[in-house]
Amino acid sequence: MRWKIAGVICIALVLTGCESVRKMASPEVTNAPAPGFENVKTGSEEDFMLNVGRRTYFKAGSAALDKTAKVTLDKQAEWLKKYTRWKIKLQGFADDPGSEEANVSLSKRRAVAVMDYLRARGVSSERMWAKGYGKQRIVRDCADISCKSQNRRVISNLREEFDR
Image (cartoon, rainbow, N blue to C red; front, side):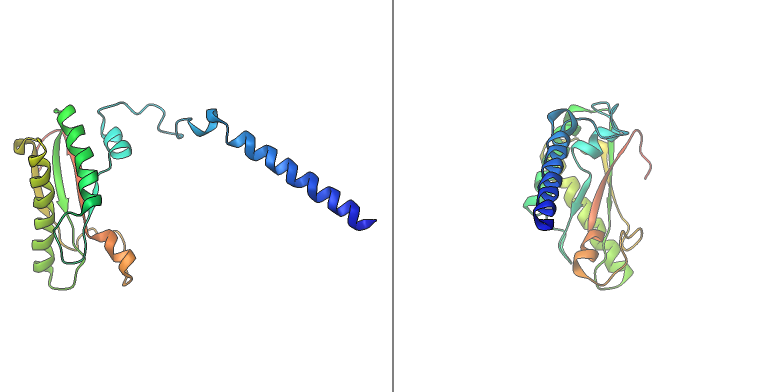
C-alpha cells in the first residue's frame, strides 16, 4: 500500500513538473528581451557586440583566418558598411610560445589579417587601424589548450574617433 501511495505522489510530482516546463517554454518567455538589453538600439555598440560579435579567434602560431572567423568577419563587414559612422580599432592578442617580441608581432599580424579581410569585403581602410598587444590583457592564464586559445584573438572595437 505504501508503494502505491509513493508511486501516485511521484507521478503527481512529475506531471506538475511537466506543466511548469510547458509554462516556461511559452513563446512569450522564450522571445522576451534579455534583462538589461531591452533598449539596445540598432547601429549601437551594444548591437554590434550582441548581434554581430567582435571576437575573431586563431590557431596557435597562426594569423590565418579559418571558416569560423570568416563567418564572424562577414557579419562585421555587413554591419560596418551599414553603420558608416563607426571607426574600428582591431586589437590583436597572442598567447603563444616564444618571446614577447614574437607575440607582439604575431598579434599585429592577426589584427592586420582581420583588417585586410574587412577591407576586401568593402569596409574603408580609412575607418580601421590595427594594433598588436602580444600577451598583454590575456583572458585566461592557464596551460590547457582550450583555455589558452581564448587569448589568441582579435577584438574589433568600435570607436567614434581614432585613438592609436
